[in-house]
View 1: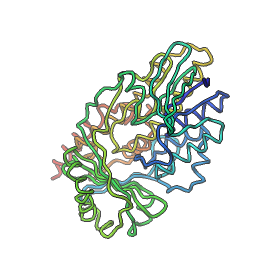
View 2 (view 1 turned 90 degrees about the horizontal axis):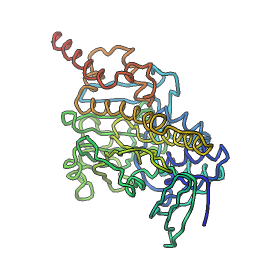
View 3 (view 1 turned 120 degrees about the horizontal axis):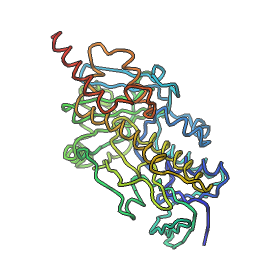
View 4 (view 1 turned 135 degrees about the vertical axis):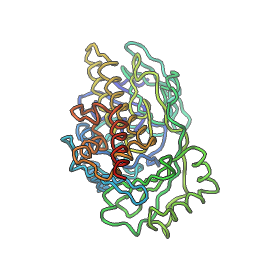
Length: 411
């Protein structure tokens, strides 16, 4: 039976960041990944905050070498209203750009770079059972030929994403408080793209704040285009090979014909009910990271940033544990990650309630306010010197109310 220091479940961004960091510290790490890479995944627009996580894990240069599309900001549209955020103007000191990536290429790049560091990366290996104890963990898994294997380790980091291996095996999942939503999406030829459109993610709000469209440009001239809305709307758009989705994208007025004659790179795909949480993020012999913890909503592209942030912090905490330190997993890990999730939760709530849109589409948005919001959009949700982080649960509805009253008085 194979024995290693740490087993990481999942070879996505959370798992590769965690494994690469621990390998740098001298630990023997094995990754077990259920799927074969490259594989399709959404979550294609990164946030600047994740760049420092990739850098600390030693993965940044490998990603740079791929020449992915540079992303310098985000733009929100609603009818004839438009608000652009540029990361170079954010409140928090940090990275001012990032990338927009096809996840099949991005995740494979991270996995290959992690393997080159000496991590044992195993694809098409499905974890079947896990036994945890204070000092030793045992995992049973099946390989792509149907063979069964056992591996022992001192600690497990579950970065299995939507697969949610340990939440499923240990009954840790809990439902989200958000309205069940879904998304339907494809990649399209983007012949009408402007230079400004190349360096930003574009978000179009419609249907009285209930639905929105993303447009994420890639460096090969294609663009990811998706519609997010209530489950019933997405199911209807995805029927008959996504014909209604295709017609909607080609004729949506606010896109101004950008994709009217575009070729669809693959038949539209859809996902439903993606928001989910967990009862706890750690237990005896294991910790959860990435989407194995909680996934909110794709509106602010926070998924990969939480993956890399939790992957890195889980690895640092695991290192402390392996060194024999008395680790407070609740205070130093779960509470830290939860604080960042809660900030974005307030902004997701504010998006669908309309408060966020009231603020960004105001007739005259204050530059300081805009720059502070920009830092949140860049992923710096742990910077509590930023009022829009520190007071996240009250500041959006309060400011939206003030703006509404002001604009009504001017009407």
